[in-house]
Length: 173
Image 1 (tube, one colour):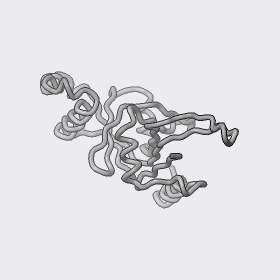
Image 2 (cartoon, one colour; image 1 turned 30 degrees about the vertical axis):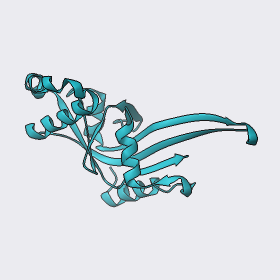
Image 3 (cartoon, one colour; image 1 turned 120 degrees about the horizontal axis):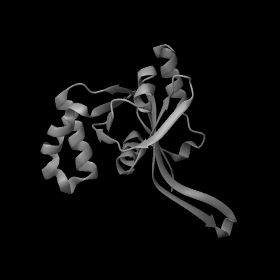
């Protein structure tokens, strides 16, 4: 596994954008993540091959995201081997044909970020993360939250992703 300095250099290199005028701020990128129904989380398998999948994430603060899953499975296998993940999201996408330019294009709002994933052990943090997830995706059913979390907390895995650098947004207006 690469040393911390090498990992940091790779993370920084990812942020350099070819069309710098499309780059947006970290705050703008966080808004994209907040509005996207799913965020693709990319990981690395033990054999070095990529593994990515769309997950329902929720953000807490400016650097922390959470998702929940089963304690076993390919996601957890990947994270045990290498906890560094990449997040990507698109919350608006509009393909267009611009007749005046005879041009096919796409207007979009996207965001990327790099972070470190780890399993949450604290019952309090797990409960708060699950509360945030439920409030984001099923807010009208929150009166059932306490009973559901009491019944399932011990068998639910919560993963925290802490961003290791500010996220980057990109758009074509």
